[in-house]
Length: 464
Image (cartoon, rainbow, N blue to C red; front, side):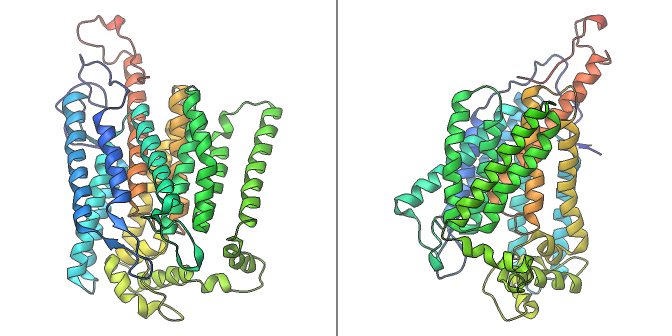
């Protein structure tokens, strides 16, 4: 199912030349530029204006991030083709992404304003291209870990310091720390950082990094509570729950170990619930509790739920190609029950993607996640996987399941921090899989290296 762009270099499925040494598993200028791009996309490309439109693009800063991203494109392609000596391979996830973009471009047929849709198309083309390049750039464990630790944790700490020192602006009803990100997006970013911190903590070795990651956890929880975002808080709980079930099979079989792990998980969840209930944002969960207990339908009357219902109705009226993102906002007043709720997004990829790209677009979009989950699970369960790679692949497995679940209740398909963390994880998992395949082929003696006798061929393992 994988399509190859370049098959001129013989060798393993990753395209390594027969006399070329294995890829060095260390970070370099590509990762540094990627972190700068990540920080720029968060800090410079958008800002939040309380009382005004939800997002105010800053033209010059936006162009700055685009130029940095363009440099990143050329650097990553040069490293893959010229330095690492690999051919570019299109796995199923990337092909689905490209097919989805082509289908998305057909939404002009149902868009009420072609000018606005042209802007949507240009914006989505940038997102698609950046996702493709991020997939190509992070093929080893250390490269991915550098991006996640310095990009996600580093940028989040900088955001927190910026806000706590007076750089943020208070939200209506007292919700704090809006900073350069809208509070719900900041909470999602904190949820991603929590996953990164957990992935560092569970790794073996590097005790100093594990201690630093552990020290960031209370700060991450504080940011989520300060934003008052239910989505961010649920992400923290989901990371713990999914990680427990993903790594459950690899834990020791002794009952004492399992009981201890379960107790720690319960204590962690209970502690987070206690912190939430004793914060000033406990009232934000009251509507969910009243809905679950049958006391009222208040939860269904919230703006988010009405937007999700509107997206579903809009998709039913435009089931083939949808209306595009701008078309969604322009047609929203016709579908909102109870009046206009303000300039907001669809709040859910599950219904929003149905509205903006039709039913085929919705299916293609979620097939990307399914493909990522299936591949990560297959690689994670491979008995030949090294212990270090198993932990990192397992955490990538946790992440793609997390983002899939969050997309049901949040719009994540064009949130840049997710784009720049999910696709590198997918690229790393695919690279590990191809190295395992190459190792299996060389172990069978099918492709001995040039200059050695067939019986002297040695398997090439994953770089450490």
